[in-house]
Structure formats: C-alpha cells, structure tokens
Image (cartoon, rainbow, N blue to C red; front, side, top):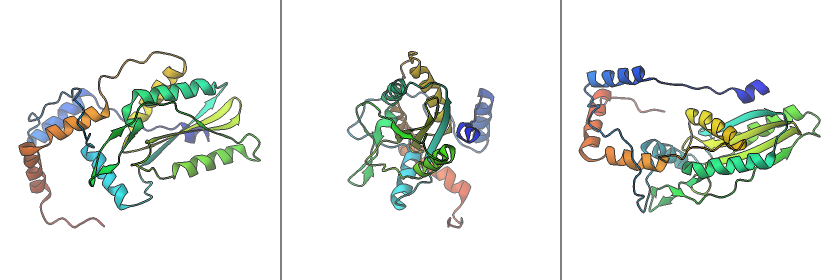
Length: 245
C-alpha cells in the first residue's frame, strides 16, 4: 500500500530538448518566432476564457455526464505524528496561492468561462478506519472509491482533500484534482509547497496565475496567426483521415 500511494511519475525537459523541438518545427515550416513567448499579468476581462486544452476537456465532460477519465487522485502515506490543524492551514494556503484550485468552469450563453472564487479555509474530510477489521484494505477501498467520484466542473472547485486515519501516527492523505486544472508536473509542485507550508516556511509570491496564461494564449492564437496554424495542420493531416471511434 505504501508504494502504491507514493509512486509519482514525472518528466522534465531541458533547454537542449526545447531547442531541438524548435528546430524540428522549423524544418516542417512552422514559424516558431511568430508569437510572443513572454506571458505577463493581464487585466482580467469580464469573462475569463478557458485555455484551448481546458476547453477540449470541458467539451468532453459536457458530452459524457459522469466522466471520471480526467480525475487525478493522488494519495500519500504520512508516517509519524501529524498535526491535522497545521495540515488544514497548509492546504488553505496552497488553495489561496493557486487560483486554479478555487476556480469553477460554468457556461454563460453556452460558452465556458473561469470563475475564480475568493480564498476560503479548506476543511479536510477525515475518515478514521483505525477500528476497522482490516484498516489497510479499507483505506485502499476509500481511496479507490473517492477517486471515481465525478467532478462538477461548473459547480465545484477541482480540489478535494481526505485524510484517512489508520492510527494517530499513520495516515493517508488523498488529494483529488481534475486534469482541467492539474497535470503530472503539478503533483510535485503541490507536494513541495504543501510540505513547506506545513512547517511554516514562507512561499514566494507567484508572478502569474493560470488565468493569465489562458488570456495570453487566446491573444496569441487568434486572427491571422490562428488561420496560419490551422492551414498548416490541415495540410499535414490531410482531409482523408478516418474519424475516431
């Protein structure tokens, strides 16, 4: 159980990888210098758009009620004395720090938008299985079941937390997120920041939020630039592709 809870796949790319990617795109005729790579804090419009990747996931979720394919449950075994109040304070700090973790994605006039709610205290859902006949198996069952609960993208935040208590000094922390707000790299960032906040270490202020990226992306991929990219990919993919099942 410990290994299952603590495995975290990851990936990293260095400057050489990114330079190679630019070179390969240039060989294929893609103008990699035609956009502004610097993302800056944007004035927030009345309607904050989703990024393109978010909008695709949002559309799939709307088309498939109860979809859980994009749930990202992450469980960690916590051994040793645990200050639950300090953990809740750390969770609260992380959610206040990252707007995307307190963002809902409702539709207005048929179009999705990001609605960022004010920061609020995070309350852990605590489930005590210490007196269960098989605490380890019960903890695994809880993690599996909760990881399959769909998210309401329009009505709730993409962040749920449960603490499963096997003993006072043996706990499993389950963090449930959704891929529309989270990815594999995010897991390592969250755990590092959560550990720092738990011990009271000050976290450096974030220069950007995900909404800034989404606004920037929409500005960059619009008009003539978007038409150029669409033309490129239509030429690459052709018009005789079989539709996906």
